[in-house]
Image (tube, rainbow, N blue to C red; front, top):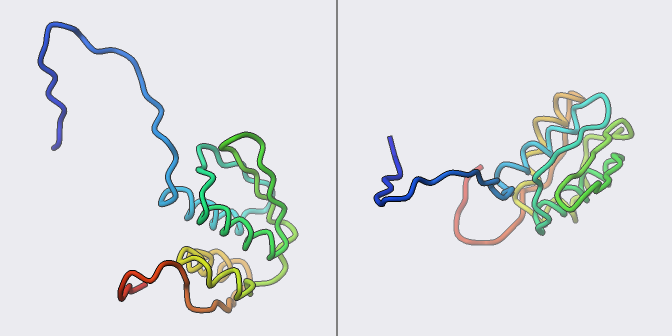
Length: 124
């Protein structure tokens, strides 16, 4: 098990709040599509992939409202289609994260191939 070994005469005390990261936020935001009402997610970074996924979710009919610098509320009650806009979905690889939630909600989903940076062959 990894550990930090602190040597010295002073005892360390305090706490830290880790910054949000896209690899944690993107699956949570995609899952909001399955909810029956508004979902508020905190510690969400305002970065391109997150903003694009929220744009895709909004294009499906959800309402997206930023309530603070890193807090977003998604209300998916207006989502009526399981087919994201291909021009948006092709912009980020994380669009594939909508497959499960949309399939669970509608029993069918149509997605374009995931986009994102071309850094070599990447499997799903």
